[in-house]
Length: 221
Image 1 (cartoon, rainbow, N blue to C red):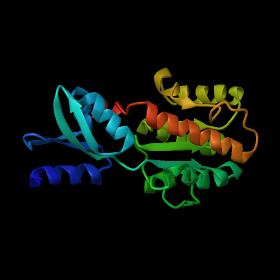
Image 2: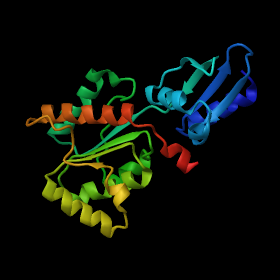
Image 3: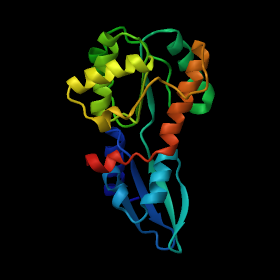
Image 4: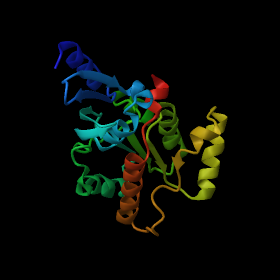
């Protein structure tokens, strides 16, 4: 690999941005495609699928074979609220086969705005708001909406969520941003116990990660 390509790949990794090294098998020609350029690239569809899966591999496009070396930021789960659901959610995330994407659970006993200064949110972060307390959840929700997190889930009834939306509108967020909030949190599987709710949340997070291209990278570049 050329040194300039390696340097570019390392810079994107350090800044938690996706990038793909495209190698044409027949000629050995290589080029680095950064996240902001994925959507406009001739190989956009297979490259976006590769970023979502986080796996490198061979593809064929237009009769030409390529190897895609994928550098995708690790997906993080941030839980707001040390409650029964979060206690169940942390180990289930690992059991679901996502342990390489969910490092050992770290508990930060601070207000969300202070805690998130230590671990800024981004497009590869899923956030679950679980406290039922607007004084706590709203701080993190505003950060998550501004950071364009790929998954934002919030606990509470539809009535509670309607009031939440009113507060977010008053804070300046538009309808497109608010439509991205999953509330009540989790897939509708009739979950009742904290463990069942945690399963429904993990299912919703995986769906958001695997089914939706992270096209916001191109818009932000």
